[in-house]
Structure formats: structure tokens, C-alpha cells
Amino acid sequence: MNTDMRELERLGFSLLERGEKKWLAVEANLLKKAPARIFALAKLSASCGIPIHTLTVEAAVGLSPELVKIGGDQLRGCVEDILLCGHSAKAIRRLDELGALSAVLPELTAMKGVPQPEEFHPEGDVFTHTLLCLTMLEKEKGKDFLLMLATLLHDVGKPATISRTDRVRFNRHESVGAVLALKVAKRLALTEEERETLGYLVKAHMRFKNVKDMRKNRLKNFVLDDRFQMLVSLVRADCLASHGDTSDCDFAVKAREEFLLNVPLAPLIRGQDLIELGLAPGPIFSTILREVEEKRKAGKLQTAEDALSFVRKHYTGT
Image 1: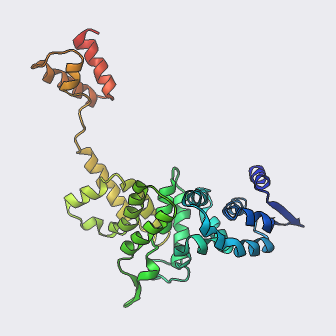
Image 2 (image 1 turned 180 degrees about the horizontal axis):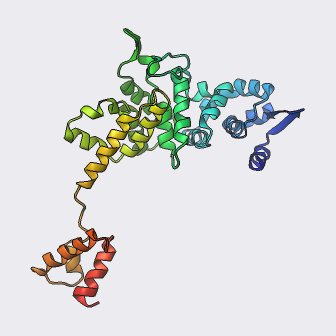
Image 3 (image 1 turned 135 degrees about the vertical axis):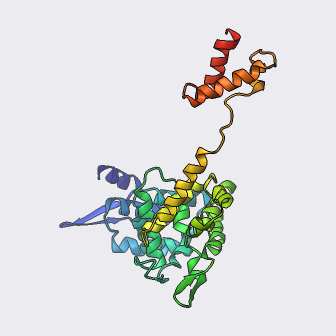
């Protein structure tokens, strides 16, 4: 709490108290000078569990349209602070209360009230589910901004794709969602690599439902993708925030482990490395490289430098 109070004072916020009740407050003029403080206010309120005073809420709502003028880099920083604060779901609800969510991320407010089939989503509408996903993800350590953002946007395509047939459905919502996510990425000034990863995570999150029926080569390519670890973290949170069945994730993770056991490792050193050590090419090269790999398998050599040191000691006399 002491840290929160120091942050409160640094930002020029006030703590109002009446008996046992407390509220966070800030003068309207201060918000007007720097509307981005609305994000800090939402973050602090969520972190310390203190509600925001009604007058401050009214002032923030009135100023929230000004948030669209914030530059992409600054807006990215504001959103990143919210998603990595450790109480992201609460902070996003605070942003919604302050009018900021509809101003900078209207794709999220569009999720509110969008129903989902109860047999798969007993937790409620798309907005409720999305915030619960963030909470589930926060229970694991080492989460980063891009993963949290992808989780926030993974169902962003549902409002535009809802249909009612035998039940509520969202056909191809992941594809529509990927397009919308890229628009958000541009708004937040993400790098080209970050945009590509974000789009992939949103579009690929539904692939797990077919993972047990994938052919071997397709499954191998899927689980050995460099982005798989991020994707499975998102999808596991998605499952835990809805029906609770993570068996498809577990199957994919196990398949990845089995494939990795059979992936040949690149050699620690090659013939060119031996030439650079001053050795003359010949049959001895095969002997040296084979011995290096045997010692690697035995755990005696782990890095290229280990291998080079071994060769210097036993074959070059240096």
C-alpha cells in the first residue's frame, strides 16, 4: 500500500476518506492537461482496490474522447501498463467505467452483452470471458505484453460473426478477429514482427479443437512453430476461463515434446571450425567430429566453445 500511495502522490492524485470509506480523486484540470493519466488512475484503482470518486469519474468520462489524440507509442505504453499491472481485468473494467475503453479500444466494448452458448461458456458474455482469460493467464508467471494483448483480442471477432442456428455460433470469428487485431496493432504502433505474431495468435487459437485429428506432418509443423508456447498459453487460459477442458492443449504439448526428442540437433562444430583451428582436412576430421558428438550426448560438452576447447586440448596441443 505504501508503494501505491507514493505513486498516488507522484501522479497528483488524492485519497479521500470518510469514515472507513475511501476514494481516489483527481482534479479535472489535471486530467485535462494530461488525459493519459486516466490510464494511471484505472491501474492504481485496480491495484490498490480503492474505487474512484464519482466526480472524478464524471470528469474522466467527459475527457475520454481526447484520448484518441494520444500518439501510438504513448498509447501502447498506457495499454501495456494496464495489461501487465497484475490486475488487468479490474483495470480494464475501471477504464470502461472512466469512458476510456470505448475511446481507444471500442472493439472491446463491442463484446459486452454478446451472448455465448452456456454449455461451452457458463461464465457469461464475450467481454466477461475475455477478462477472465486475462485473470487465468496472470496466474502463470512470465507473461509478456504481446501474449496478454493477444489474449485480450482473441475473441474480438465474435460480435461481428454471431449467428443463431441450433445454438449461438461464431463461425470464422478467429479470421475476422485477426483482421481487427491488426487494426488495434497499428493503433498501438506495434512493430511489424509484433503485428505478425499478434495476428497469428488470434487466428490460430481455434486450431486446437482439431489437434487430435491432424495428420502427423501438419501436427509437427503446428507444435514446433516458434510461437507455439505463446499460443498454448493463450488457449489454456481460454479453456480455463470457459469449459475448463485443457485436454487438447495437453495433447499438443505432449506431441511437441515427442517431436522434439526426434529432432536432430545441429552439430556443435563443423569441419570449417577445425580448419580455423589450424588442422589439415582429412579422415581425422570425421573422428574428431564423431567424438565431439559422443561427448555431447554424454553431457560432457554442451556448447560450441566447449567443443572447441576440447579439440584444442586433445588435437592441436594448445
